Amino acid sequence: MASEKNFFERVYEVVKLIPYGRVTSYGAIARYLGAAGSARMVGWAMNNSHDMDTIPAQRVVNRIGLLTGKHHFGGSSAMQQLLEAEGVKIKDNQVLDFKKVFWDPNLELPGRDS
View 1 (cartoon, rainbow, N blue to C red):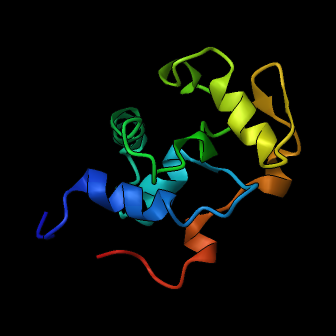
View 2 (spheres, one colour):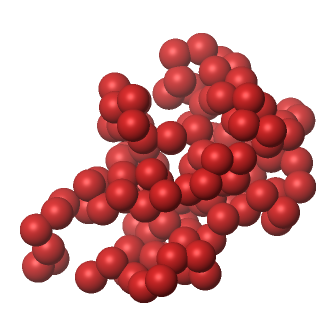
């Protein structure tokens, strides 16, 4: 990949743009970055971001709105608590009204990262 920034850095740039009270998926970020088959790598980036206060990793969930990354948040309910503090409703580890709060960088951002 001929980019000055590594993949994780590019993921973090996108995650920082997710609006307060919205969520996106690992796959949506991967598609935006031109790496459609790399949702798992986005997950690794999120796992690696927990010591970075500026990365709102709680806003990244799986493709159906499950809080699959919750075990990386110190406590079992920390990810849910962070999302609920932003007004995102969660039940049984899943975002309610997922389609309503879903933020797709491919539709919301002006152009793909190159």
